[in-house]
Length: 211
Image 1 (cartoon, rainbow, N blue to C red):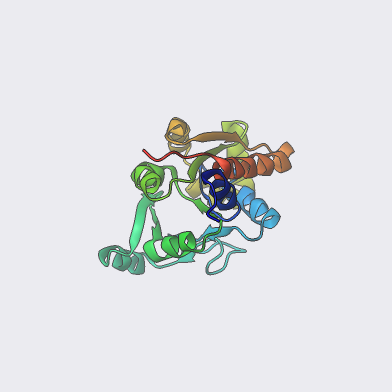
Image 2: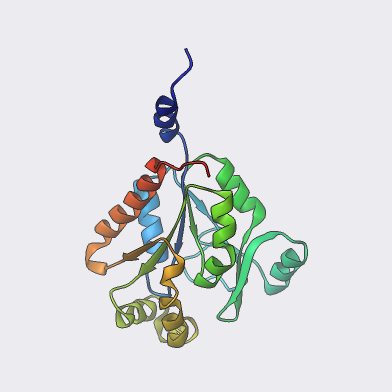
């Protein structure tokens, strides 16, 4: 017996994946929050972006980036291998087409962290490709809190490179390019993870009507 439309919708809810795009300024805690979300939901696919920046202490190839030299990165650009890429603080960041398409084809929930400049380049393209996608803008409690986080993570010398206050302020003004605004407080990380997962689940259960 053929299922009714509502039965099909209920069935589809159990199997369809959601694309969660997470962005925000330096010190907003993107990597921390995504890592905690993936720990809570191990089945989530995390799109690993590619960068020309040097690997930091504690990092390795593929965690949290695919690391390339600038020359290698530029060769990939010339070959048309990137879905999107930006130059950010003197380094190149981008998502390779195969990485994105393989993740989306998995049928799983997918989390994708990109820089704010990247959001402007790809939001409409992604919305056209993936109806169940949500762009989340992450921010710390204040500018000073985010600055302290960067200094703690990078040290004084590293923070001189990574912390660009005028750029952070510009990024803070771009929050309306996203669908959701989430304040990520050090005192309530568990709540931040819960809120992020609520956004993911709400998108899964949203009724999207054909235009």
